[in-house]
Image (cartoon, rainbow, N blue to C red):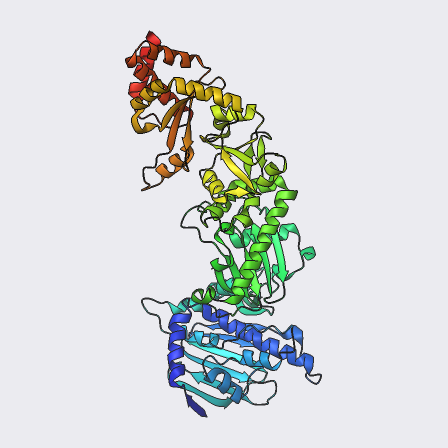
Length: 620
């Protein structure tokens, strides 16, 4: 018997690893199955390089055995096995990886896929075990050895007997406590669930003896293969039917509708990975809430290491579901080290480019599907521009859609710019398409041949202001004081009218106090008597949005009340002023201001007073 004590630093590392690196106890089974898969991989590689070594590849398998009476769990493989010195080297030094050493020794073999590299996975078994034994026989030896440890002081290695090559790991489960029920790992359904969750795509069959009923209702035992072995993302696109992708998506991501888009990609280079991603056809019920958790399922060589890796997706593409499987990511990576992992960063950047390209393809070649996508997730793209203060605008702005007054449908900024001659992209914001179209200044702009983008989402105007300019074109709000399509002659004539009525307009402004910055006559309202426009950075719609936010400040846009110079109301106001009827001039001013607010979808601050004034005026 060979007895060895763990070194002090190894004891410390073991304690830290058991209590810190793995926060989920069921991970131990994933680690041991991955080690077993590695052992078979090594034997398979050796058989390829050594013609004298004869193995039957059809017999490769990993077995799991449960013994409830003795409270043990066994993981058995028929892989390469270990000698006594290899047991001491690989299992005696924590963080020493036999797989990593094997990989280094065979570094010329590019297609060699070995899962484990850090050598700490095996010790995760001590999270659930009070004692672990490893009975192993190397393919290169006639002798078998058994390694035994309680994971505290050290280990022993004793010569033993074993008929075949491979390793048999026996876990003696810890006693149950109030906090932990270790008996759950002696239940078939628990083992099946864990294997399906983490190790479903291990390429060798993982088998376990289960009890079933035969046709005569008699209970018999049979070997059941727990894993599917071949990941769908490793199959060629031509080998998989759309229905298979849809079924996989529904099963993995619990969606009752098939996805709008399936994205399959494989990359080799600085980092190598395969990805299978899906763009859903609708937003989950909690998508726009804090409860929603973004992320792709992350696999390392077919073994799941994270259910939702948020670092693989930027927030603006958080709607994407899918799986990433990489040869270059460690099986032992944690959430804490994820953001610092260069391979993860490279994969994330590559995925971002691929997702954008697929969205552009959908936009250009299947607009109906893209519009459905945009209805569900367009707000997230807008937020990606706004929340980054425009840093992501070059990436996202061509994916945005806006409703065109000219086309009566959604278009892109690129489409808009492609058919205009001027320097401005005109837009207007409001509650709905129909309401925006009825706004006086919008009617005026459309009547003069201008195409106006009609914005109905609360983020739209903030996004446009964040974009600033698009292809050297400036955005112009047709409800802004600076918007004017009048000729120079018309401007001069209007200036004269306002100058002539300066005192009356000043008196009317006094009535409205600070509610408006100015009152003036305009020539751009066609048949409408009055309207409100704004001056400065905050529009009327932005005022509504900002003031509707919880704990938001009371924001006020700089409003200007414009009165149609050609409307009969204009002459009525002038008449009241000429007759020195200040009382009625004040009443008309309040009513006109109230009307203007209603037209813009703003609440009337004193509705009772306004309705009484209207009735009073009507009754005369």
